[in-house]
Length: 163
Image (cartoon, rainbow, N blue to C red; front, side):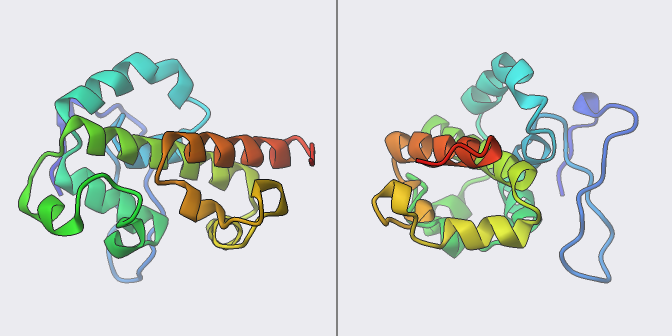
C-alpha cells in the first residue's frame, strides 16, 4: 500500500480487517477509506476533498476502499465512469472517476453510521425501496441524482422520517 506520511496524524484509527491473518491498514488522512471512517468529520474537510479529487485518487486508495467495504471492483462497475480494465491500467484516476469514488466513500460512511452493521447497510442497498419507486438503491448510484436520492433516503431513515 502506498501511503502519504505527510498527511497522517498521530492516533489515526485502523480499518477493521475483513480477512483474518492480515495486518490492519491505516488509511491516509482524506483518502476515500478515511472518509468512510470519518463520515461525520468529512463535511468540514470538503475543500481538502476537492483538492484530492482534482489531484486524482490513487489506485492503492481505491483498492483500500474496496477492501474496507468488503466489496469487489466488479460490484462498482456500472457506477464508475471508467471501465474496470482501464482503471487497472492507471495509477491515478481522473477527476470524474475520483469524484465518484469520494461520493461512494461518503455514502458508505453515512450508511455505516445509520445502519447497525456493514452487512445491514449492504443488504439495504441491494433491496428494492418503496420510497425510491421500488428501485434497488445501489442501482441508482450511477448518476448524481441517484446518489442524492439514496443519500436523502438514508438521512430519512437516520431521523425516522418515512415517506
